[in-house]
Image (cartoon, rainbow, N blue to C red):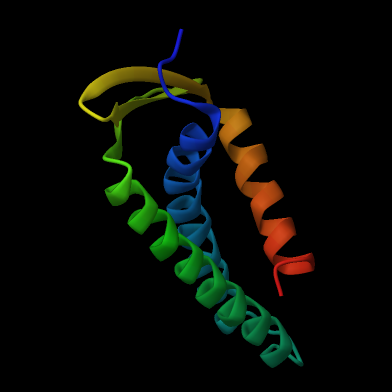
Length: 118
C-alpha cells in the first residue's frame, strides 16, 4: 500500500512519462527531417511546438516535485517491467510498471499534446 496521495502520485508519474515522451518526439523529429516527405515542414512544426509544450509542463512538474519533496528514479528494467523508486517526503517506495502500460500512457500523452494540448 502506498503512502503517497493520488494527487502527488500523479505528479511523480508525470515526471516519469514526460521525459519519455520528449525522447520519442526528438527521435521522430530526426526521422521526419531525414525522410522523403514532400511537405515535411508542417510535421516538423507540429513536433517542435509539442516539444516546447511538453518541456514547459515538465519544468512545472519538476518545480512541484521540489516543493513536495518528491523524487523518482528508474532502478531496474527487464522485458516486461520497469521498476521505479519513488521518494516522497523521506519515504521510499518501489513501484513496478508493466512496460506496455508505460508505452500506452506515453502514447495517450502524445495524442493529448497533439490534439488537445494547444
